[in-house]
Length: 152
Image (cartoon, rainbow, N blue to C red):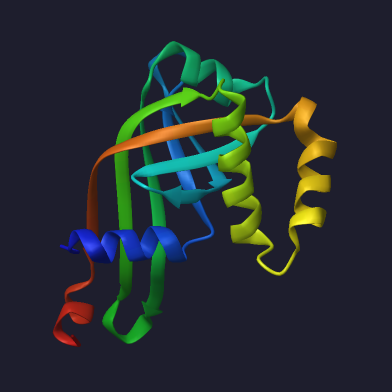
C-alpha cells in the first residue's frame, strides 16, 4: 500500500488517467482524460455534451485511476507497477470564478512555460466551449508491486 503522501505524489506527477463512471444501462464507462490535482480535488475539461457528461449528470459517484509505473519484467512473468485510485463525488462546475481557477491550474500543468497573457488568450478563445468537471476526492488507495516495496 502507498501512503497518503505517496498517493498525492503520483497524482501530481501523472499526466493522464482513467475516469470511471456509471454509464448507460448500468454498464461501467471508463474514459482516459488529462487532469490536474489541487487541494483534494481533481479537475478535468471536455466538451459540454457527450456520454461522459450524461453519466456525470445521472450519478455523482466516480473513481479515477492513475498508473505511475508499469515496467514489464519478462523473466519474472510480472510487472513492477505503482498506481493510485481516487474515489469521490463528481459534478459539472458552474461557478465562473472556480472554473477559471481550475482551467488555469490545468493550463499551467500542461504548459508551464507559457506566460499569463498567452494562457489567458487560450482560455478566452475556448471559454464558450469549455466544460470543467470537478471530482472531490473522498478517499485514495495506492498500490505498488512488492518488488518496489523491497527496494525502498
